[in-house]
Amino acid sequence: MQQQPNASQMMGYDRTSTMFSPDGRLLQPEYAKKTVKQGSSIVGIVCKDGVVLVADKRIHEKLIVPKSIEKIFKVDRHIAAGASGVVSDGRVLIERSQVMAQQHKMTYDEDMDTHILVKEICNVKQAYTQHGGVRPFGVSILFAGVDENPRLFVTDVTGIYFEYKATAVGEGESKIKEMLNKEYKETMSIDDGIKLAIKGIKKVLGSEFNMKRIDGAFIKTSDRKYTKLTQDYLKKLIK
Image (cartoon, rainbow, N blue to C red):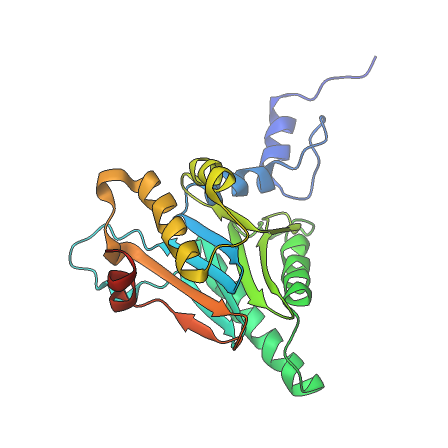
């Protein structure tokens, strides 16, 4: 008769990312996914004229300067990224993606395809679930880019990725996804997409919502240029 693992053995499965549990699970990546769900909300939407990323800065202290908190980053002139979960993990991966994009441009004299960049970053993420002495990256990153068409990808902590028309990660992602499933339309303009994304974040935050907490960017299909959302732009858009 096969012996069942004792408590100390089960603790071993819990503490290492390189060992499968008896029921075929890697527990450390599962815990990393829970970390992502505790991160600030980020919404990505593909529109008819481009792609949008909008995030909650999650400002908890009155004396923090809002401009000093950045949740949406420029990867290349045609690619943006937002990280939810352990932000320091996200920063490291996004900086790596910036280097990859520049190396590709210098080598091939053309912009890096968003899909290829996402695959490279996911290869890095996957490696950190397979080697001893390291832990998984506790972050999900949304990559939004315009190649021939606008595209939106989510990278999971395990190293897999999915392409979406619209999605959300972080705090309250299920509520935002439910709203997106009902209200998203492929004919939306970028301005409509920004409004819908802010509506989703507002639904999660409730009375704590403040426009100063919003960080975002969009890339238009026409010029393939990363454009940061400003408070002036948002005030004109959300009246």
